[in-house]
Image (tube, rainbow, N blue to C red; front, side):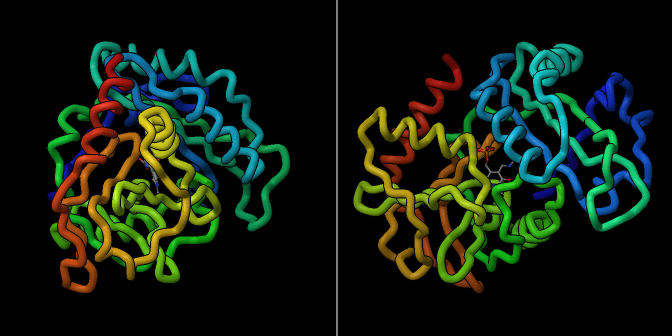
Length: 286
Ligand code: PDD
């Protein structure tokens, strides 16, 4: 089902707070013309940021990868301001940050000395009861580019993949490249076989998820074994549990997987996922 979403009451654009209808950007903004920009989504559990420094560090990495000069030290206080202006300091929320290269006459090469376009706003997110969800997940070919480690606003392949899932009655699309699972259209994937967790290693074919890092830290703390390796689709019949992670996905159980009209996985047990969810809940709510 498609949730219509909603606009925030205020956004921060290039140094000023304003209502979204007044926040306008040039048609020559490279974010508009090329998707030449990056973004970040940071969760706040009842006003408390969760792994804020890791989100800022990923933002810094992405800006450096695409050579956008931007001083990220201004961000942290503005994120708290976004939350309080939106009246979300006691609620579950997230802060969206987007930085594009800025406005200049259209050229394929990066223009010199232009000012990045900077957008930020806070929005409410439902972060409760994730433990109860059982997602029906479509499996399809990963046709994205080979720098998925850059959290680029150029998300057309992700949105096309997600659209295919949602209109088909699924909750997410789990992508496959060269016979191995990469990640979901907006989430990281984990597979459990005989008590061992498998997840793809960080690299250019997936986003380095912050929730992924948290889950692996929990595994180390609880003594749950894991291996960072690409998981082949042909081994899906051996799988006991699958879960997807992300800032808004948290740790969501995959109830079933569907590939070319056939169900290729149905969840039977979920002990490991449940242990991770319980510890995740504890860490996010402490
Ligand atoms: N998406 N992989 C992709 C392709 C993603 O878009 C996301 C997150 C993740 C999980 O990353 P993290 O745990 O850091 O949220 C993995 C965000 C939330 C979004 O696009 O809105």
